Length: 89
Image 1 (cartoon, rainbow, N blue to C red):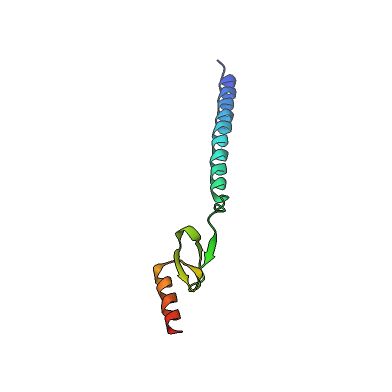
Image 2: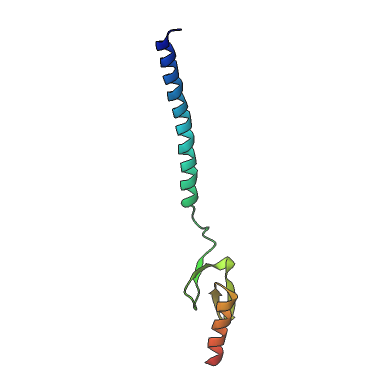
């Protein structure tokens, strides 16, 4: 085999390798972008904590029924603070 043929084969193998390896990288980027674009299920509505104003998913929030209204809190601490504020009134 002549050196020119060996050089051509090496270049062709390199191009083939880059095409295969490049395809794998694009797939991993696609998976990462899919993770970023995930949307919260519509059944899990965000509620605003009346004390600290954070948005909290309804299923994860502390709930308090007060005067016929349901309030959602990010933590027990915020819930207790709400109770303390409304006991004074």
